[in-house]
Length: 509
Ligand SMILES: CC(=O)N[C@H]1[C@@H](OP(=O)(O)OP(=O)(O)OC[C@H]2O[C@@H](n3ccc(=O)[nH]c3=O)[C@H](O)[C@@H]2O)O[C@H](CO)[C@@H](O)[C@@H]1O[C@H](C)C(=O)N[C@@H](C)C(=O)N[C@H](CCC(=O)O)C(=O)O
Image (cartoon, rainbow, N blue to C red; front, side, top):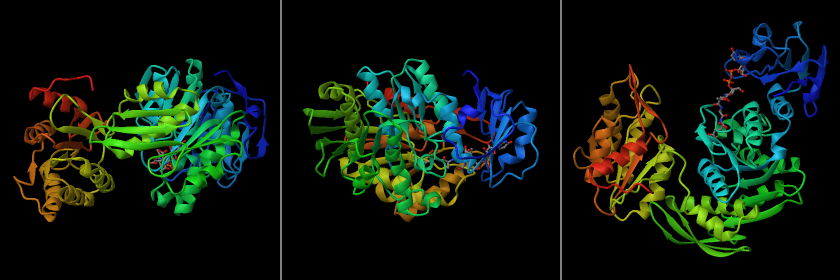
């Protein structure tokens, strides 16, 4: 980026005082002193573990040309470079970043997707759908980042990264020729306490569903809902057309529509309640579903190559976004039939075998409950689950996972997840204790096979036509961590390999 003056970055920032030269040129922007380079503006943030204000000297030593401090935490100590005192430095980060990167969101059709469940999948599916129908798409999701044809894993440990990362990615998208950005918008990111997505100039806001989650952060359900609804308020940053898209099946949908600017186009999609884009499930299986869609743009039958009714709803959300952006219904339906699940998220593995295989990242009691409850009604045969539990992490959950899986599945194959420094057999024994509580017995109800490759093979060998084999807990992760080494791992590839060994080779799923 070309240098900007400090003063030119402060337009939408609640500045209380500016001490020193306002026209100092700024070459980069960071909230981490360890990433400061000569010419950086360092934004000091008080966090949960440390206070960025303590690293101001370190930042200046590394070449920071100015600092932004939070009036609540700055001790007024003299600083050798210009200082901007703001009301809340965490909140200042997004407007600073948007200004620094020259508001790239305004040059894109920015699409924000929020909800409690299904954000990553819907973000990915929407990006795939728009790309397949001719858009040049960028994406920011928990699993991957994408700019045009380039895709790489999101290693930030955040679903919605901090504002400087978001704005830098959006600028890269513009430079690469993208016209559209699909952004997974978490409640943390949207919360006015953080406001990471301020400045994105959203053209489309999508609400998938609202459950009770993250109440430790938001305090109450009402606050959680209000924080998520910020996405719809952010449509107000956009000049020109904007769309507010909600799931009519969620009882909170009207609340979200109310948060959107009065002139935003409002669209509801739904499988059950009356909606503009109305879906009716004609068939729903463990690996795919067929949905009849009736909409102002016409009627068609949609093949959704993703497991579960829940994904039929997510697909309708993606379809509604595409329709709002002028994609013809038939073209959108054809593109949807070819989408893939994001890496490790409910990925059906179809090599032509007579039983279903799904790879998913589910690795805690909550996600176990959900995935089993969702898939159970769709499985004619038995449900076989392969999973483990992480070493050196939450010990209490192991037996609970075993108990839930024992209650809801027919056969469990207990194996390694990431044993780390712990005894792998001991972890498995703790899971097995939970399975025993649910009435499972070794041999008939559960098998203990620490070697994950062998465990997958044992599950496949046990599967009969109509059964479902669920491979859980690894998802997109690229390794199994042991005490002294990491075993490179690719669950999808391992599943395909195991199926190939049984004689099932079809690869174009
Ligand atoms: C728990 C939490 O909210 N953590 C966030 C927080 O970290 P923290 O409070 O621990 O930061 P800290 O270590 O105390 O440091 C405070 C400040 O000093 C800086 N620092 C620190 C050390 C140093 O040498 N120099 C320096 O400048 C840090 O860069 C930081 O700016 O501040 C960091 C910088 O802003 C965030 O990156 C970090 O997000 C972490 C990675 C995180 O996990 N956040 C979660 C809560 C999150 O954002 N989740 C949402 C939703 C997830 C969901 O829906 O499931 C998401 O969008 O991912």
